[in-house]
Image (tube, rainbow, N blue to C red; front, side, top):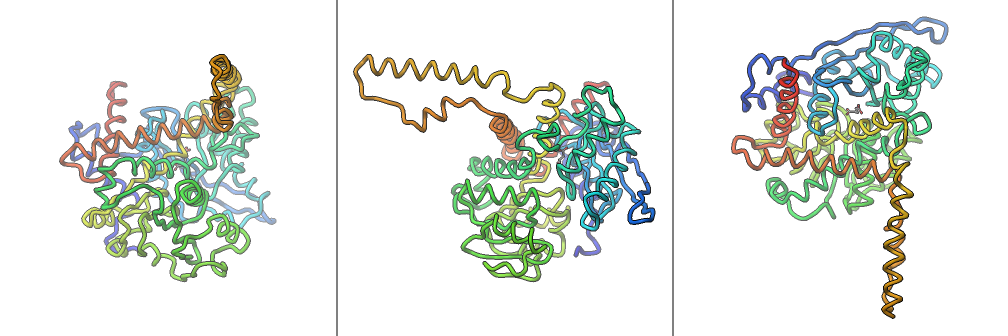
Length: 476
Ligand code: GLU
């Protein structure tokens, strides 16, 4: 897929980091301290499956412990290796710093194809992997808090949390050892949709930045924008669905493992997702046009390209032909360092992964806080807030009667105003605020510094600055 000169994912992250620190004034020792990955633990363990012992290899890498716990997902995939896990752990450090989630960066991975095993087998494998990490404090509410990533979800997180509780029966904060749990097992509303929702909020904020929009050679709002999304997994599905339903975007291409679907009139995201669920891929889908060479659709005309699958999909072999003026990296590392310079040269605007997909870890942060406080958000305030709003409404209505006026509130306004926020609304509000603030911090560097001409470098400058400050404050 990529050309021989292509740096590895890990090298790509280092190249991008180096480009940013070259513009900073950090002492060389500190620069090196921030760049390197602190530790990577490799575990090989056996599980008895189908009558024989199968050996699995897994990793948990800790990139930076300038804040603890460290945070980052656990990936189950055949592509997992030490280099990849370390690159992803580094991205977690920068991502958390950028969105002010008070964590260091970490990542885990297990070399396994989850589609090859049934639910019971996956439970045995996950619990055994978790056991190995828990007994070394590599899963722990105060030290290292995993979350879902590619190939894992609520189900795996619930097994991990349960495994931790079995091994730490008196830890009152045990449930905070992992985030992304189902809501009936200590999770939070809105975590599953969070990364896709964050992509939507990021794009909304981008389109409020007229200077940024102009730099992409675009105009207008999100309404009517034509989008191609690669990967209809958790992130790609939610992003595409929200953008189509709520922002008037048209999903004109969906790229999946077995090919792509294109339709200039816009594809029905839910229908495609259901089709994939039932048929294992997009081929045979009754609407739109099926394209066997899915990757070629990355090069098709559209306004916004949303790579939401694997790393390295836009690389030196295709970057020149990618013509979308705006790319938002919903996946981690979808654009290699080489492709990044080709695209920058062409004037393509890239909203970088460490910002674009930070919605997941942001809501993980809310879940962790909820777990540590042992109470759901809004439980104390909701009815009190409603009662105070009711007071205002009653008083206004009394006044209007008193004045003999025919004025009245629209029932819709009244309903909305009177209802106190539930957990999901609070989570979305916190996420929206986070995405707006992080965009502003990045965009001000992008627009104000003459030596920064892209959002990725701006994002690195902001986040490395924060990590450096925190090391300095610790006296390191
Ligand atoms: N795996 C997600 C990411 O790459 C979420 C991490 C988390 O919530 O800790 O950002």
